[in-house]
Amino acid sequence: MIVRMSPLNDANMIHRSIGGGGVYQHSLTTLSVFWPEVEHGKLIARWPHLAVDVGATWDGHRRQIERHCALVEQLGHKVKQTAGDVDGLEIFLKDNGVKRPSVRDLQGYPDLRTQPVMVNWPPARTASCWCGSGRKYKQCCRPHSLGTIDGTID
Image 1 (cartoon, rainbow, N blue to C red):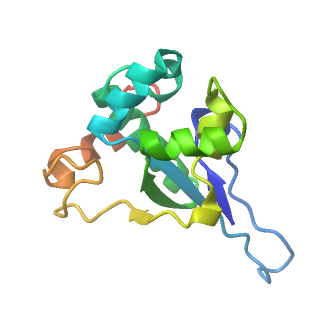
Image 2 (tube, rainbow, N blue to C red; image 1 turned 45 degrees about the vertical axis):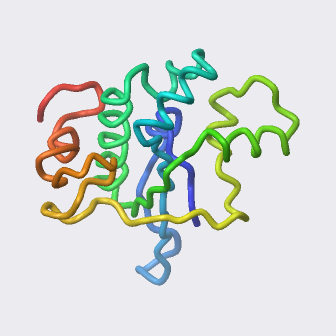
């Protein structure tokens, strides 16, 4: 089962077993859509009202995504990531008859029937960061996952 990740879902994430005696475990994988730097810029330029939902700056967006991924993983769920692109979002919106996208539209994108490329999160500490910066994960976005969702450090 893949659940789309968003700040709206964070409070409702609960890890639990279904069934008795350890017979059946509910496995949940959460899809995190992140916007690479160029695409984030295009997204905010095209639909400025979405800055509230995806972060007004790319650094803010990266911090938000990293913290949400860390929170979901702390709850015992797997996280997969896929990159968003404005052209793909525009096609998705057109196919769904949407002229002004909302947070609900962002949560529905991408259409999983299109089989977007998904990668496991987190990357290895010394692997390239998921955000596309070219830096090692441990020196780029990983420090953001060490804080809490509101930005304080644990």
